[in-house]
Structures are given as C-alpha cells and as structure tokens.
Image 1: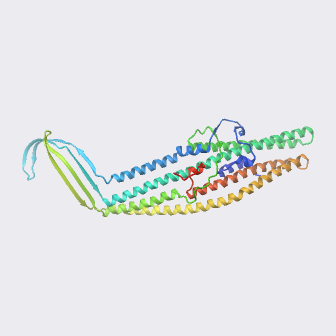
Image 2 (image 1 turned 60 degrees about the vertical axis):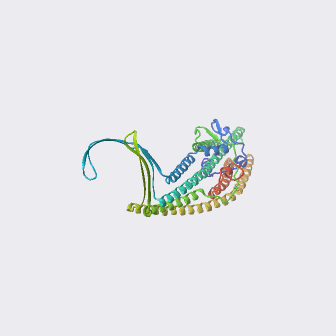
Image 3 (image 1 turned 30 degrees about the vertical axis):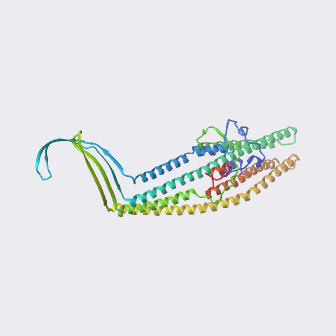
Length: 445
C-alpha cells in the first residue's frame, strides 16, 4: 500500500479540472479546520482568478508591449513614404582674401544671412513597399502571439486553480484519516481497559495515528505550495493561504474548429520574412529616387534678403556586395522560419493526438475509480465488523482505512484528469477562451 504522503504530490501534480471533489469523496466542504494549524484563508473565486490573470499576468503584459512595438514599427514604415521637412537659418562672416572661380584673388569683407526651408524625399519604392508589407505581417504576428500568450495563461491558471482545489481536498482526506484513526485509538484503548484487546494493538493504532498525522502535515504543505504557485502568477500576496471556494464547471466548447494562435503567428512571420527577402532584392537592383525642394532667402543684411528656389530630381542605382550579402541573409532567415513553422505543425498534430488519447483514458478511468471507492468502503465496513467480532487483526482494519483514503484520492485524480484532458483538447485546437472558462455564452469578441 502506498503511503498517503506520497500520493498527495502525485494528485496535485497531475490534477486538472475537478467538478466537485468533496461530493465525489463524501467529504464536507474544505475549511481552515482541515489544516493541522488553522490560519486565516483568502477566498479565491474562479472568476476573480481568471480576471486577475488577464489583467495582471506579466506574460500578457509583455505580449501587449510587443504588440505595441510592432504597431509603432508599422506606423514608422508608413511614414517612410512621406517627405521630410527641413528648416533652418544661418549667418556667416567672411573677411580677407578670397580666390574666385578663375583664380583671381581679391579682398572681401561681408556678412551672409540665409534662412531656408524645404522638402526632401529619398526612397527605393519597391524596397519601401515590401518593407511596409513585412511590417504589416509582423504586426499581425504580434497580435496572434498575444492571443497565444492568453491561451497559455488561461490554461496554466486553470490548472493551478484546480491544483489548489485538489490539494485542499487532499488535506481534507488526510484530516479525515487522522480523525478515523484517532477514533480507532480511543476504541482500542477502551477495549484494552476492558481486557478484550492487547496492548500491542493499542501501540499499533497509535503508530498508525502518528503516521496519519505526518501525512496530514505533508498534505497541508501541498496546499500551501499550490497556493503560493497560484499567487505568484496572479501577483497576489504569497503569504496568504488561498481557498478555492468555487468549483469551476468544465467548459463545453462553442466551436471545435478553433485557430491555433501560435501557428497563425508563425505563419505571419513566414510571410514577413518573405517580404523582407523581396525588399533586399529591391535594395540591390531597384532604382533610388531623390527629390529635393528648397526655398532660401539670401542677403548680406537681414533687411535686404532676396529669394532663391532650388528643385532637384535624381534617379540612380547603387550596387554593393553588402546588399548582395543582405539578400542571402534574408533568404536564410526565410528558410529558417519555414522550418520552424513545419516543426510547430508537427508538434500541434502530436499534441492533438496526445490529448485525444488522454481524454479517452480519462473517460475510462472515472467509472473504475468510483467502483474502487465503493469497494474500499465496503471492505472497511466488513473489516471493522470482523475486528469487532474478533475474527481478524487490527492490521486489516488499518489497511482498509488506508485503501479507502487511496480510493478517494484516485477518484479525485480521475475526475480531475478527465476535465483537464478536455481543457487541453480545447487549448490544442485553439478554441479555449475566457468566455468558456467562465461559463459565458456567445462568441468571443
């Protein structure tokens, strides 16, 4: 028989959504009285936890910042098509000998004032267009990355919340075992006093009670650790012990054909890499257009300035090995991104197949766990009756109590794994949303 203290970490580590663990195991609602050392608890409704995760989780904050950066880069790429405005004013003074255009020298002494403003534009039109398209795809990719971050946050927080509930139920089961064995000690002590039981049986019962208390402490520690893990991602005070008082309902998907945001984000990244490669080609082979418009006032005195207008249009090419190397670099980046997309497609197919198998196994396990719990209860009743009739030893009763606690844990674990498999199936298909977790109807906006 496995020790209860070893079972608690197993349940907490593998549990997911559990509809009603107290009802499933026949226990009263979990409270501070189930702790070895009662302390104030902070109630944590599932809705509040989800809303806090959406508003406070730092992964979502980083994803939102990345989306803002991509949006700003897209805006910057659009502004690259606009001419720049130049304005300024200057003053200069020249005194002394100056050589003219034909080599003659003369003595000069004058001031120069030249306020001016103008417009200038220099661009490779093909390169700018492809670069703008690349930024558009990068922005779309950042939006999908935010949705993927939200999907992962919802899945992770849901698991942590239910881990907290399962840890609470584990503590309650350990508490129940302690109470049962404390009662057993009192019964055997009375029988020893009456001369119908051996002192060795009392020692055996007291040892079993001490072991149950140790397991109770271990279960309470699992509760505290689950609380700390959830509080950390929600940025709540980890010193406060959380009590998950609301039983989340396993969501029914509004649609099974969801879109995997991580896959869409990488697909947009492939398109962005393709546009960047095209832009590098235009940078090497495309003509560069330069347009300048300038208006200047020139004179030797601020009160005596005359107009000067300057217009220039130039079309030219610049070929360089550095530009050729840029083409090769962007082509390799494109190839690398395509391979990453293929890797993700393979991973998604494997994930969908895995969660489908998990769901099948979890569905088959729940009725078996219920059957085992019923059998364990019956076994304990029979063993207790046989012990009172003097037809068996105390060890059989203690083993039956441990088997019943084990069966309770197994049922909680089985129900939890069933709901967790359903949640993972929704997440794998891209259909997981806050509306489903909160039991709200309607399509996501």
